[in-house]
Length: 495
Image (cartoon, rainbow, N blue to C red):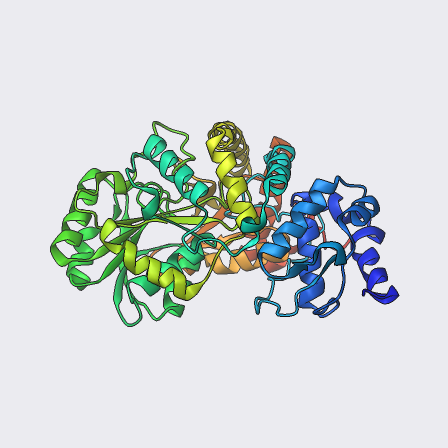
């Protein structure tokens, strides 16, 4: 049984800290889940320790019982809790060997999300109450079979919902058997590398290209072949010239990461022809395709894939909330068996409860309504930041006009290395990234990458732009720039 020390620890983590929910961007059930995971990971709760009943913890936290039930159900489904009927719920005797990523410390600002953080959706606009209702409904539906680990390919209901959504909105025709649900985009790439046995194999990679995917592929033993990107997207001719026999190409055709250009029709046809001729595969990362502010959304490359050489990859993390950690693959029919084998070997399931909730969110039309709302909101917030940068940073930066996405690229027009600016900005609470860090071949591009989704008002955009202007001036002229930086709103500046 849990002793007084253990119960005091739980009270400290859940009750005594008044900021538990107020300062968290997560739904309440996920924050409760996270606190238990931290207590387990840090050894404050161990195997066999009893945890409070749903009713007692709900009373302590002043939340609905369904909220606590949802958190407990998630912990049971992942193997951290054991439900023992009348005997109560305890920490599992055999805990999964999965450490929880520590949450970064909050910066001293109104939002827990750093200003200009890339790849982060507008957490203030997520329909938390609706999501919580769907989670609670799933908990109430739960039967004994639902408490198991679930299908390694993903919950059937979610795979059906994804297949229907892709057919309607992305022009991708597939069966649920071709859909695999993974733990985020990283889980998708890991499954691809395993199923295609990519260790030691060569892969075309966009240059510049998505930094974290590049790091993951290298970690998996993949040999990357840098292929330049221009205004028409990946230069297929350059790829063929550099390595015609590469086994794989990883591309972002709808909205290239990070330059924001689209892969032209001619380049798409050339890429598909190369894959067919060489017996190679193309991973289509459908990055930010849903957020397009000029013209109509572009067709998915997979919708043009007559020869079935494209593996379509999507993720709900940037469209809903990062903590969801749900990605998906649509694989060619001839690869289904290989992917099933790898999925069984890797055992990287996402929580059943979240999968089934996401299925309801899709099937009931909430997802498409949310995307429509977000397009309008993001267009407004994008406008706030673009205008502020043009007014206050024009002497240093030229903002690229991208047709879509949730990030901006501002090219440096002054002689200062972008990584120097990014490092200085990060020290001042602006989560910029240097474009040069996304390059495989150094020296070709200099710029700053930034997110705009959590720039809520025009005034906030102005404040951010003024601070960035001071940082840029300080980087150009450190002695003269120090005073300008303090005037621009440096929170750590001397009085």
